[in-house]
Length: 57
Image (cartoon, rainbow, N blue to C red; front, top):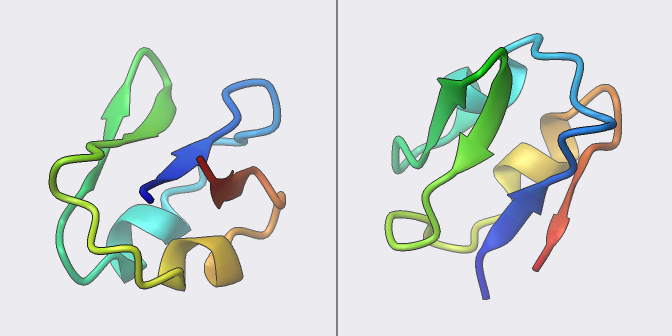
């Protein structure tokens, strides 16, 4: 199951995007979003998010 980013908790730092090995994270409307079809469920983004905004969907 893909991961998701809570838009209210996201501080748009970009750490998750740079850490994502599959390139599934991008910026939209000043927040980061995860493309569920590109996410490989590795969990790297969840571990790297300093705001704790990422969890499994």
